[in-house]
Image (cartoon, rainbow, N blue to C red; front, top):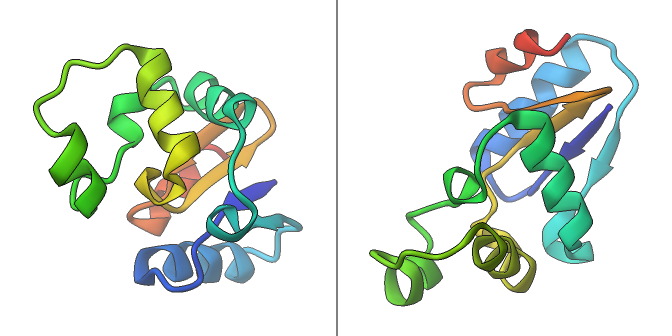
Amino acid sequence: MKIYHNPRCKKSRAGLAFLEQKSIDFEIVNYLKEGIREDEIKEIIQKTGLPAEELIRKQEDIYKKELRDKKLTEAEWINAIVANPKLLKRPIIIHENKAVWADPPENLNTIL
C-alpha cells in the first residue's frame, strides 16, 4: 500500500492517521518533496478510474491563475501535475490494483 502524502495538509494527515489505525503496512510518498512522475500519475488515473482533471486541487493559486476554464487534454492535465505536484488532490492511496482519494479518510475502506 502507498499513500501520496503532504504532511502540511490536514486532510492528508487524517488519511495517514486512518491508515495507521488500521495497522496496515504502507509506504509514504512525499510527492511535494520528491516530485511525481508521469507514470505515477497515469497509475493513479488507471487505478482510481478518474480522469486527471478530477484529481486537480482547484483551490491552488496556480490552478486559479493559469488553468481555470481551460480545456486541456488528459496529457496536458498530467503534465500540469508533474510540473506542479501541489495540484494533486491528497491523500491518494493505492492498494494493489485500486486507488482512492481518501477525503474523507473512510473512502479508504472502498479499496481494502
